[in-house]
Image 1 (cartoon, rainbow, N blue to C red):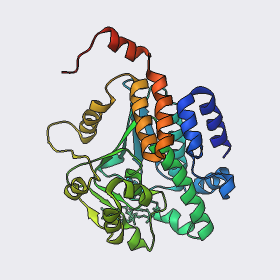
Image 2 (image 1 turned 60 degrees about the vertical axis):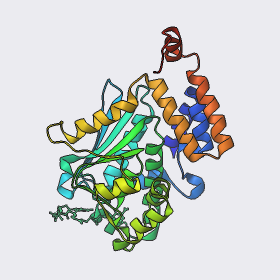
Image 3 (image 1 turned 90 degrees about the vertical axis):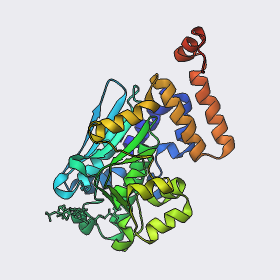
Image 4 (image 1 turned 135 degrees about the vertical axis):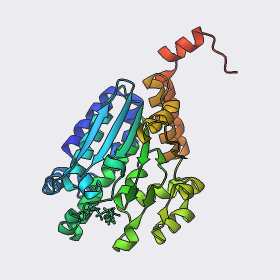
Length: 305
Ligand SMILES: CC[C@H](C(=O)O)C(=O)SCCNC(=O)CCNC(=O)[C@H](O)C(C)(C)COP(=O)(O)OP(=O)(O)OC[C@H]1O[C@@H](n2cnc3c(N)ncnc32)[C@H](O)[C@@H]1OP(=O)(O)O
């Protein structure tokens, strides 16, 4: 909560249009102390379940790679990894040169959801609610980052791992990979915001089928219903990560302020009522109008044949 407040203060001071957008959107976080959510309390609780890590690599090109790293548990999320993820998202929020983000799992598989050992220990309703609010806040902030994000799915994305893929703007799947919302088999529904986001990605009919049937979504089905953008085919065309970087580079080519502005206007269009989205679009437009990239394009008399 304290961190959230500090971040909000910084955002208010430094990035007008984006800060105003986040303020309208509960300041980037869904839950605060008003909802009985005490961030420090749940962080402490989660840290009691250590294991694995979340690695963040930022490149000068403006591309970052976030890796879910706990291969001995198929990259399940331990408690400390949930805290790590929140910290990495904070880092990315402060990365002014960022344009693109790839979220991947280590060792050829994406993520098998919550670490079931932590889940068993936190299975009382109060702890479950706290973990749910913590992860909803983090994944909402991940989706709202002012950069274009892609989940690179290799192997399996199960339960909370499937939910994580929906917190990215796009999903790319390797041949043989699977996204499966296994929640029904666990006597649950998604709690990390995965159902709400899934409905917006594939529509309510498809979402109902995927959740109600705990369907194993292979790349072919994912393409058909619009869950995935592309299947990363082609042996010899580099590693899946290199292929994902190539795919993303089409959309991140250009100066960071322009790419960030693109993400911001699309995000506000996705999340806000029309009149609010229009106001945000005006504010964001004001940040690029007459800016260096705009002036350079005007001076070069560029044509778009
Ligand atoms: C439901 C919602 C909830 C949330 O939203 O918070 C969740 O996400 S709960 C977690 C949902 N995920 C699961 O239930 C996955 C259960 N695991 C599996 O189905 C399999 O392990 C699978 C398909 C991921 C991999 O199968 P495979 O045969 O290839 O390997 P192993 O089963 O031998 O797995 C290797 C090793 O990893 C451990 N593992 C896998 N997933 C988890 C997990 N989610 N939590 C803790 N540990 C996990 C597995 O137990 C094996 O460990 P070992 O010590 O070798 O037995």
